[in-house]
Length: 117
View 1 (spheres, rainbow, N blue to C red):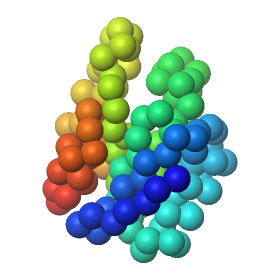
View 2 (view 1 turned 90 degrees about the vertical axis):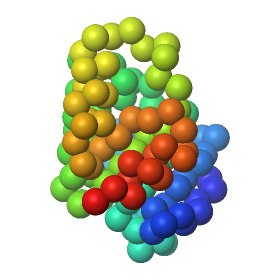
View 3 (view 1 turned 180 degrees about the horizontal axis):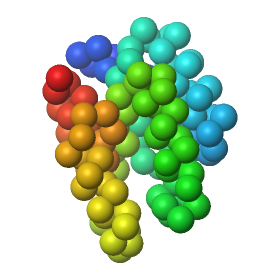
């Protein structure tokens, strides 16, 4: 796992799964906040369990609620083109029009979205 701080945003890139369930998400949030003192985190999509993107499993809602509860803005960056689920596309659209959770294509866009007030 590689973490760098850009504009007070912890940008994390990992080749290993980091977010596998609610507990690992909480551990991730707390570790990053402790290590970087940042309340904005960008993470590459491949570090998130694939089931997260199957909304019917409920994992995304549970995990993202933890980011909200811990007052941490969060962006997941990566390729979303393979997903055809309308509910997921709608979820991504709604999230990206909010102020706390973002699903974007690359690290630069994640930093841009998290830099907005």
